[in-house]
Length: 302
Image (cartoon, rainbow, N blue to C red; front, top):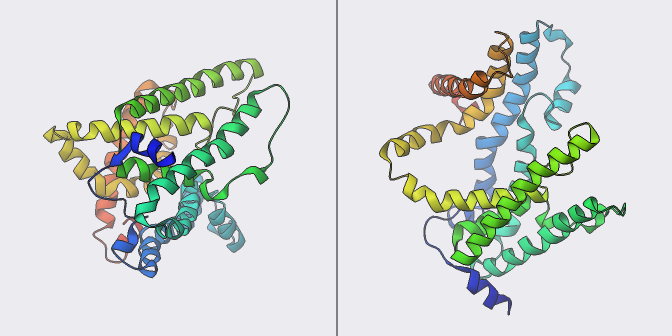
């Protein structure tokens, strides 16, 4: 019965496979971790060291106030900058060999099961109990760790990438995505107005609302991108920016602090919010381009 339901929703899709879970088709597990160390962990370590130095210089402090324990604590807990994203990323990398060990012909069944059961048990049921006035909260013992939080996106992304979603299921995902977005916006607004502060119960990257509209947005972009890429100008722009996206992420917050705060720009200005990101991206691309020209330095902005 499970296979019948799957075949009604999915049919095998062509095109390139995600490199992570299918890495064994290209190289060994040792090479897999080696590549990810130089691609992500090394830049993370370097910029985690540079961040407090840059922050101290920006604020006019003394570098002698920085300590080894402070560096270690700030790096492990990503308190220096916006690099929190790396910690769940490294945990995902550590889990990938487990998913890669699942035979290709069984992945659709196993990953579909994990996405459904983990979303229900880890996300939806606790979320519903949180909204009910009964005062019941579920302990973390209920979590199914193999698909917890960001790991759910890995499994869902693999399914969306490798199997074409048939039209009825696609429309259902879009409807759920819209419902999740409205729940996030309206729920946060009304709960916050009642509480008198920004209520967090509808927020969170791994909370039910964000999970629903994130999956829907991924699917929508996947469906419309082939048509969008027929626009030559847009395709050239995407191709140009693609190699710089990671470098932009590494640099952008430091430039925001140095430029926006240094020039005392009005962060609430609509001109600033809509215009400065384009200036910021241009500056980041230029700096990354120059850094990559310096032997040895290019490794920190791969």
